[in-house]
Length: 57
Image (cartoon, rainbow, N blue to C red; front, side, top):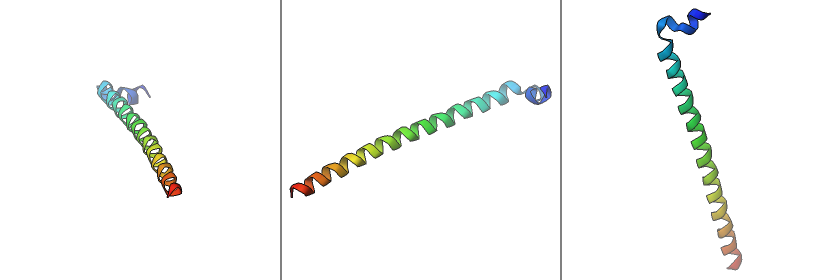
């Protein structure tokens, strides 16, 4: 098992690449979720203002 984690002497590079990839993917998921939340709030606001304008007409 230790040989697997040692990766033939390349463990430092292999595991750092895995770590960096995981951080980038996690950051992407967080950014997309924040963008989705903002887009939903903007859409909700636009729909409410449109509904209010139609009610006044």
